[in-house]
Image (cartoon, rainbow, N blue to C red; front, side, top):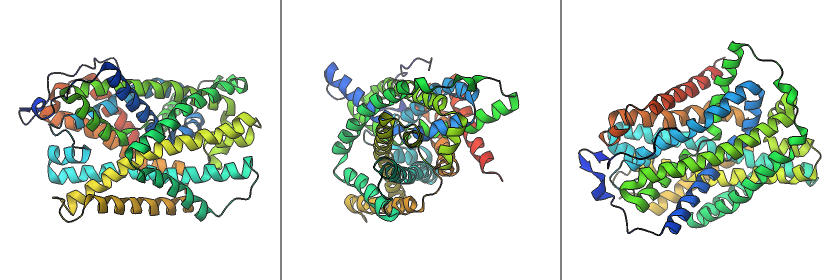
Length: 438
């Protein structure tokens, strides 16, 4: 994160300046700009803080404390630099309202652009499915363990919960963003409260002994894919970058970097503090038990800790985190699905209306998420086998390829951060592939 965020002179695409097509609108007041940027920083934080964060202490902690220390150092630069590169890719387009699917098709041609659109969808869609499983398990655990009620039929509970999340989406993007922010501010405070509350339960003896170098490197390697997933907010980067272009014109990439730095700082401070507190409080046996029960770490703490504070706030954090993150990921998944249909079936947009396509995509996502929530597969297995490697490709590797190829991104070539992001992406993909081997 040491690189200067000031973007070079106005980016060029095919030799033409973007300043003409994306000239900044009339200047807004500093207060309005600060509010605009703060709202986006909070929204990006909310997109990232979801099931991945709640399950991160499990996999990260099971790898050992020393690998977790290395991961804590790496996660900030990994998150910031990769999302900054993806935002720069979208901001490089001279078309103000063009999202990532449109930028990819124009930048790489229709063939490769379609492939990237499909990969983008596959990077996000499995996460929406994961949230369907996560919110069903969390609410079921809350009803049984905290309210001492009988477990409701899974098909009914999951259908109601997924339907409620979808209902918020259908009220409109403005209402959805408002609900997300209502969820995120209390979520930050509660995460901090839980982190501090668990301090008396810490067992620092787990730091005794240093793992062998081979075991240590293996643990770091295998935890990075879950780490990439837990801090991922790429589903919101496309619309975030479009909003930045609308607000700042040719300065969009520069201001986007500032906002991304703020959201990354929030994530590292509050999330890694929470992870460390949970790992030190539960120890290896508690983390393994939570993994075996397929529960978020806070739901497990609520069942085992015996404190009324954790018993009710734990599931509340889990629900708020999953819901706020679901909204951001749904937008990305719907954007990808719409881009696939437009690029392969209705390129000029004359066969299917926008409203009909949005409705069809919503029905598809609802039905499949409901089905997966009923099936209740292992969430961590889904993360490792489906979401992780595709996220690494679209977030870490694709923007690096674009920087090497596109004239508009030429000013960003030759930076050491490009090497770091590329290596991180390769490590994440290779770790997934290794984990899938028999």
